[in-house]
Each structure stands twice: as structure tokens, then as C-alpha cells.
Length: 179
Image 1 (cartoon, rainbow, N blue to C red):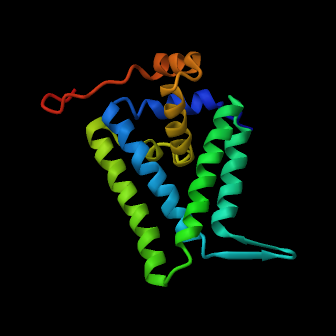
Image 2: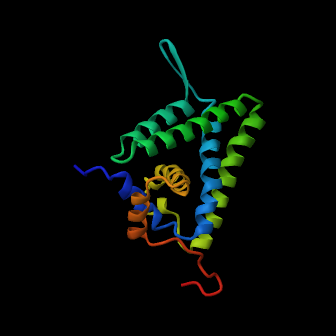
Image 3: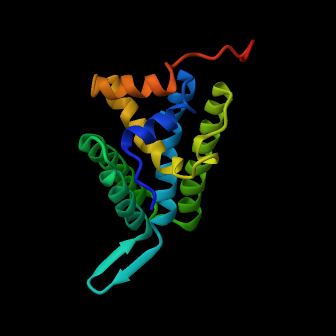
């Protein structure tokens, strides 16, 4: 049986694909758009169990929340990413109730535009997205964005220092002379 990777291990591995500061900024925009788009698309899938009516979006949220909160790492980060995704899912439900055209426009549009923004960031990075090598990167993305936001407010400097020790410092890649 494989041992569960810690939050630090997951973030450090993901960070190796995200050292260009422009790429990190695109993730602050693209990742929430993708999560929101998925939420919109899954919000119309209703799952009924006796006494409970859930949408696919809330089921996906509960599964991802369990994953974020069960990582061996700071509970504050698990709680923050769970809260952030919860807000996005709640907002997604708000726009999913319109016409089919509106629902699909919001869901597919946000999802697709979010990915375009991500790929622009990876152009700056000069490296493929992390999920290409490790599908878990799709779950780590929201955690990475949340951690970066928290780090920017001074949270958990030792964790940030260890991530940078493993992945290297952030930089702006010279596109005229890419390395």
C-alpha cells in the first residue's frame, strides 16, 4: 500500500511546475473559473437518496472536501480550500437554474476559458501542466492557489520556505532567451 503524500509533498511537487510568477497569477484566475464551471455543469445532476436531494456539484464538493481535509498538513489550509470551493459551488448553483443554453454557456464557457488562461500561464512557464504527469494535480490546483494566497498574507512561512527549497524560487522566465 502506498503511503499518503503530505500536503507539503503535494504542494512542493506541484510548485515545480509553477515557478514563473505570471503562471501563478493565471492560476488565481483560471483555477476558480474551472471549479466554478464544473460546479455549474454538475449542479443540474440531481441525486436523490431517501430524505435527501443532492446535486452532482455538492457530491463532488463533499468528496473533494474530504480529500483536502484528510491530507497530512495544516488544517487551516484544508479548511480554507474547502471554504473557497464551497463558495464557488454555491455560486455555481445560482447560475445553473436558467435555461439550458444559459446553463451550458456558463458551465462550458467558464471551464474552457479557465483552461485557456491556465495554458497561457504554462506558456510563460515553458512547462506542461502538473496534471499531465500526475492526475492528482487536478485536485492540488485549488489547494495551491489557496496556499499561495495565504502565503502572500504571511501565513506559514516555514512551509513556504520548504516548498521553495524543494521547487526553487519564483521568477519571471525570459521569453526572448528561454532556458
